[in-house]
Image 1 (cartoon, rainbow, N blue to C red):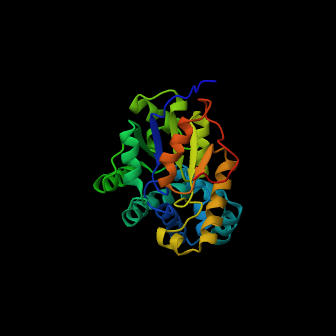
Image 2 (image 1 turned 135 degrees about the horizontal axis):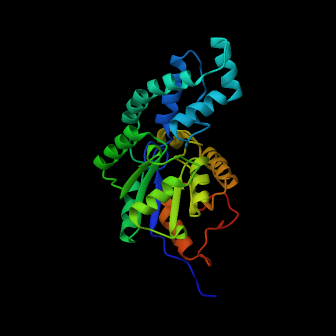
Image 3 (image 1 turned 120 degrees about the vertical axis):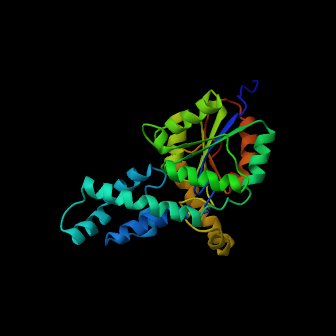
Length: 279
């Protein structure tokens, strides 16, 4: 049977944890700081739990976590309110912007990957759960470092952020690319994977720099080979459970995966094989 694949024409990247900010430290640090300022301590894992959502929805998801809610009630003698959300979100915005400045470095290998995709005529769009000012800040920093996507879509640009597919559809609209089977969504959170699946495009999880691993590049490289493999495999399994069609250890593996997709026997997105991580 002839290969009926439609050539990949667009890659939709997430920002923090995928193309910048190895380990997605800026959002997690900002949420932890805001909760601490309100007298409620949260763990790094708790701060990362809802990662990928619109940042206001992320804040609400944290407040709804039973353990955090219990600590909140112990601190204030009541449940949280919408007024609390408004106040905390208002304080979160400048904290997040400051954190971005400290964690805006490009993920290793990104520029080489982008160059290879460009040579294949593939469009590139950035999407993010960041609010507009934060999305502008990461774009500005990335452009200065040499990474210039064709468009940048944030949660404020659509009716609902991830896991809804609207940012991916907006990226397709902005670049004039369709159908969805010619689009690859690459992200580092479960919400990224869910959004890609909902959009009907190829949905790929990147592991080593991901929020699920949650380590800086230096911290990750300091692990033993066995520890690195274990952390990467755990992230990959979470992505697979969320519906990912494939996972890659690092962003550098994306061009090879795109070649595998181009050789697939069917155009429609599907799980490529049963392995946790494709290299």
